[in-house]
Length: 150
Image 1: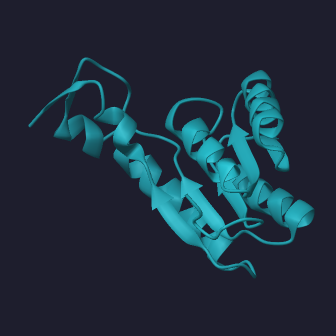
Image 2: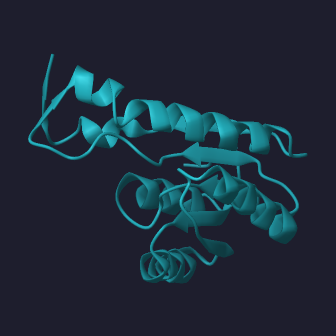
C-alpha cells in the first residue's frame, strides 16, 4: 500500500518492541525515516538495526524516558538536529501496568495521568516544529490480549 508518506520523518516513542516497534516498522516499510526511542539502550539499538536492515531507511535510535519532561525536550531536539523536522508523531509510551485483569480504575490511575502529561508535552514540542504533525496514541496494549473488567 502506498500511503504517500515516503521520505517523511517520524518520531515513534517506546518503539524497541511491541506496538511501538510494529508501528515504526510499518512506517519504515512506507519509506518513512525514523527516530525511535526507548529507555533501554541495547533494545533500541537492536530495533534500529533490524528496521534499518529490513527497509533501508534512516533510523535514529534515542535512549530516553518519555515520562521525564527534560528527556522529552532532548528527544525532540535530537530529532530536529538530525532531520530538521518531525512530520509524524506516534505517541506510544505508557499505559497501566500489565495484568491479567485490568480495570477502568487502573487505567485511569497509574497508567493514564502520566500518559496525558507525557503526550501533551511531546505533542507541544512536535507541533511547534516546522513539519506537519500527525498525532497518534496507542495505549491499546493495556487492553489487547488481556481480560478487561468494567
